[in-house]
Image (cartoon, rainbow, N blue to C red):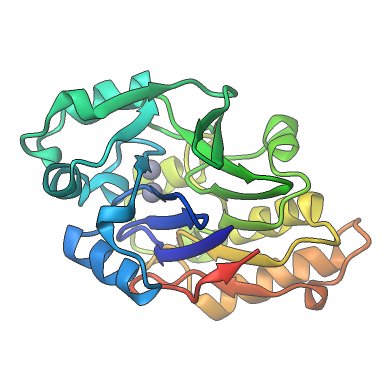
Length: 265
Ligand SMILES: [Zn+2]
Ligand SMILES: [Zn+2]
């Protein structure tokens, strides 16, 4: 199974997961052109994409969706709540509604040799989910846009071979930063985003001996920077009550604009 972050951050999100026979995207929050260029960088073409899985309707997750769905006729999958919220938005432009299919959290769905299981996350959107993919005994997950994590989330992120976890903000930078009060409260709240500390603590609970790649994603442009996210997450892993040290793992930042290398697991 292959895994690549094409773009990740509050400015736009798009992740590729594929096998030799199947290719899918998680979110399409950057322009159609950038998605195509990102796919090109890993030797894939948009015509080979079998589905786009949408986590939720915020524009940083669907900005390029209308163009991609229209131009390539790619089926779009999401929860019923997200589907409704997306189709009610101008961002999408004119799309063929019959390309939009519904999924349910905790119900597995397969396209050829690639299976996906959506799971609920707490975020200020209609019916947001994160996704975990399976092929044979391998699995990868993408978990961004979550205000907090609990046992349910941890359970869905156990025994992974690769993961992209949100490391959105440094709590202190956010608190003293320029954002208006209501926005700070929104981001810090239970339906907001995961801080660097919480990302590190979550990783402390889900890391395992076979995990091959750990990516930190959805970094805030205003309230975080890469070195700080990395240092905080690594400190949390190493100090936490788990048998691991951060240096036991390949941890990398999923770039805002640049696609990551293709990770084969
Ligand atoms: Zn969001
Ligand atoms: Zn987002």
